[in-house]
Amino acid sequence: MPAPETIIFTALLLAVALLALGVVLAFAGRHRATDVTLALFLLSSTVFFLTRAWIKDFFPFTDKVESFMTLAVLIVLCARYYRSRIAGREFATLLLLALVTAATIFVFQDRIRYPTAYLLTLWYPLHIPLSFAAYAFWLIAGVNALFSLRAWRGRDPSLQERPLMTELNRNGFLCFTVAMLFGGIWGYLAWGAYFMWDPKLVWSAILWLYYGNLLHLDGLPALRRWNIPLYILGVLLILITFIGTGFFTRSIHKF
Amino acid sequence: MLKLICILGNRYAGFVLGMAVILNLAIGSLVMDRYPKTYPPFFPNNLGFFFDPVQAKHAWLYALLVTFSLFTVNLIACITETVVRMIQARDARLKQLAALLFHLALALILIAHLYDGVYGSEYRAALDDQPQDIQDIGAIRVESLQNHQHPDGSLKETEVALLIRHDDGRELRERIAYNEPTLFDGGRRQIIIQQGEHRPKGLIITRVADGAPLNLLPHEPHRIESGHLVLREVSMHKMGMPVADLLWLRKDGSRQQLFMVLNERASRHTEVELAGERYRYKAPLTTPVAFVLVRYNPAIPLVLAGLLLTSLGTILLIVWQRRRA
Image (tube, rainbow over all chains, first blue to last red):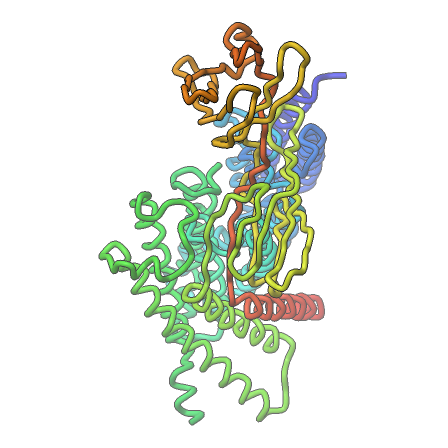
């Protein structure tokens, strides 16, 4: 029986390699082969998560390697779910985004540690995957907007109605709202406050307000044409919330 | 009246104000990160912090308060207008209801946060085995404290048993742990564990001849045949070992300062001689100390109402999505 660390590393390497293959196949328009590759990627990721959960004796969302991998998996799942409603190149770009997210973990030194006492609560594993699912929905909306940018510059009037972007935003908003509810309850029980002036919390509030505000665009005809750049800007806000506050601030949520 | 509400609740103004709030929060986050001494981690949530004294650094918060207030007025006007319209039309669609609940929840939570920021309070306390008065709760002492470790030695959990004697004489036993505070007054008051440990408060020494133990507490004279022994303090020696500073007061009034190394490996220095008898260090006398945060948030009922409305709004939106699908 190989050591758990070996299983984890092998599963991780295999998952990233399969995702890279999936990206190539998606850009080549080989749909069925892409699906098979992505299914194998998900299987490999499951082995990765289960082994880590077994070692840590807890849900595997507590360090940066697990966080990046979770986000990559959720981007793949969401992209696959919306595949019939987005262009082939958009789908391939989303897989590329997932690949970059997953491959980032090789930059870090992977030290598997037991979670700290504050993390050992059910609210934490409820809060994290839902936040990342929201990021995934919003990232798909952002990529969708990015691919519409050229048409937007040409003032294509059909771009004013973007039901898919609104739907993606609504799903993301729902996930993020529930994630914030769970996170708020956790914060109240662990630190006595559902909100603190911490960069991660402030930027999470920013994201929630921003995407909540964007949900109103459909009802504001004079502003509706700004939906494309605003959804693209949303991607930047997600990056700041996830990576910026996680690595470059003094947040207590820092990785 | 309805016209005024429509003007105040203008959707475009709401969108722009929402973006202004977001910009303010983003600037605030950067300022807070730039000045870690002014804004340390876990700095107080109360708004008084930003006004005592007023500082140019806090300009982002003053602007935020203005934009948030305008945003809340817009939000409340918008909600009122929607409710009036729903009543007039005698029609409430699922999506509209969900949106209404989300907006109501947001307005409630903003008001609750302001209320907490003005009237809320928090302070840190170190609780031990002696009763300590905690304002509006009662006298609290630690009955037991246990730290649990992961297999690698890192902290997994701290469990503290508290004995709380309320002002009316009632006694209550509560257990606190990480993520498990004890709540009072409908959740408005909390005692939250931050750290727990056993701290030395004295030491046990034994008479070498027969092994009879003596418990020494700081500054409490202990009678030994021809005099009194007093533990003055326990300090760290420059060699890195804990040392007990003892004072031997003889009946004739003379006094002698003695040092005892509190480390079993330093065998020769763990003994002192008193009235012809040798005494040896045996073990430290420890007391459980729980470092806690005592928090008062009077806005908790409002927050709970906001939580309930958000949950209802979420459920309605999910139902609407499913029906639409």
